[in-house]
Each structure stands twice: as structure tokens, then as C-alpha cells.
Image 1 (cartoon, rainbow over the protein chains, first blue to last red):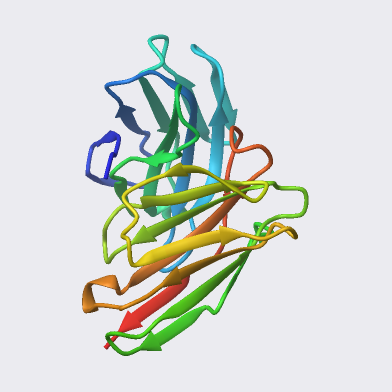
Image 2: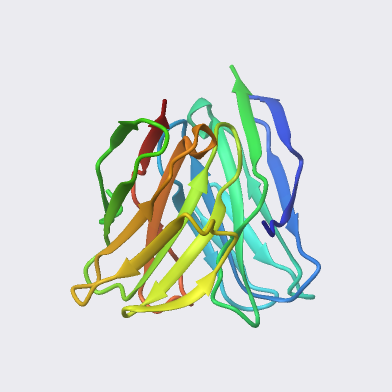
Length: 111
Length: 112
């Protein structure tokens, strides 16, 4: 099925470091969402973006809707052990109501 | 708690059987999405409903079908089950289908 390209695939970082991940698409998106998923659980919404260029923060998390409307990034500052999990971007293409997910970024944080 | 309820939480069944997964959306949400997530894989979009009507379709197998009822709950029916259908099945809901979507805890289906 159709998926967004998300990178990196995995990250191993030390507690306190900043993290950056991004998502790209070949088509224009109207909406970008970022989720975190713990093993065996449902994805939890972190940030929602609706306008090109929009920059939104949620605590230590910051996400941006790319100007071209074909990409988005998520930054996590000063990582902590509970940030461990899989982060997914999701987007809604301009011409459909489908909500398509990226391939995920697996984050490991070491003390 | 996202407000989206999925039942059952776990389901074990044999190949060839048919099962029904149920989803109750958040209060006020008109749109429901279904996703399949195989082990260590991403979320594959199956189908979306808005106010009882099918709105968007992904790579949903012909053996699978879904519907959204007048009270807005949704059911995903999986028939002629195969071993490869073992996965987590998630439901999500949103107000309009064009806003943020909230996920349930999923149903873990194991086909033996």
C-alpha cells in the first residue's frame, strides 16, 4: 500500500540529546500528523499540522508542515527515557480522505 | 484514553474462519478508519467511513469488508482467514475525516 518515506528508520541516542526525523511524499498533502506508538498499543497523537509552513510545539516536541506541502519534520529536544518508541508521520493527500502512514522511526534512548 | 473503543482486545481463531471486529468512535466523531499492522510493520490503511458511507479505500482484501452503522460504530469483517491475516487491527476516528484522528487500543488477531 501507499506509504510516506520516513527517515531515519531507527535512532540510538543518549539521554539529553536532541532528535530530528522527517517525512516526505511525492504528492501534496493537506494535513500532517505525528504519532508515537508503544509496543502493542495504539498510536497516540502528538502534533497536528494543517497549513504549509506551520510550526507547532507540544512540550519538548516541535513539528513543521513543509512549505512545499510534501514534507514534515519532528524534533524532540532534551530526550528522556520515556521518549522510547516508534514515531510515525501520517498525512492526508490533497485529493483523498485517506490517512496514510509513514514507515516509522524507532527511537532508543540510553541513559 | 483516546475515547475510541475496540472489542475484542484479543482474538484467536482457526484458518478458514470468519471474525468481526468492532469499533466505537469518540463521541461526536463521524469518521472511522481501519488499519492493519503486522508484526514490526507500519500501519496499512484499509478503509474509511464517514457518517455511514464509505469515503476512501486502501488495499483491503476482498475477503475483508466493513460498514459503519447509524449509531456510527463500525465493524470490520474478516473471512476465510489465513495465517498471514494475523496482525493488530486498529480503528481510528475523527470529527470530519479531515482532522486529527484518534486511535483505539487495537484488536490483536491470531490465526492458527
